[in-house]
Image (cartoon, rainbow, N blue to C red):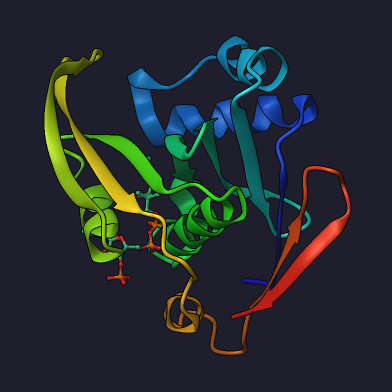
Length: 187
Ligand SMILES: CC(C)(COP(=O)(O)OP(=O)(O)OC[C@H]1O[C@@H](n2cnc3c(N)ncnc32)[C@H](O)[C@@H]1OP(=O)(O)O)[C@@H](O)C(=O)NCCC(=O)NCCS
């Protein structure tokens, strides 16, 4: 895999690819193209990013920013690229975004049966705070509400831990919502 990755805002041009990826990642509970479009065009609190290798979308996340809270509302890695460290990398980006927005807490919900995601969140410090009965449909299932106080800084060890998967090193660029290259991390 290339060691040059770019995190950039999701646009309407991405929706076909993102919705297709979402369908493979979430199955019958995936979001429609229309739902993604609504998030991008009608929701002032929504912030959606895609992670790319400049050619393909490898994963994405969406979050709702409300006052001092960032709520991670969707998050997926292309199933063909799961297990390669991209999920951990994207989650680091979510934490970094929360810092940049000066949020005090990050929250999310996860299906009770989704052990992979729960393990990832727990391993990065999220606490399981509550069970939300029957939160999900298709199939019907409880949701686990998880939360993490936004760290004051994202420790370099988080990036190093994520970067260990790339033996030749990894450069992750962040293209900010204004469209300019704002930050570049070498992990
Ligand atoms: C959850 C998801 C984003 C993880 O992405 P990923 O790229 O596979 O994850 P990574 O390779 O970066 O692994 C990150 C952590 O996930 C956990 N993990 C990964 N694969 C796992 C597995 N098969 N079983 C248990 N835990 C696993 C581990 O804690 C791992 O950390 P470690 O490598 O430090 O041990 C991905 O599985 C996905 O897109 N799933 C479908 C959509 C989804 O469930 N989204 C979350 C909704 S709340």
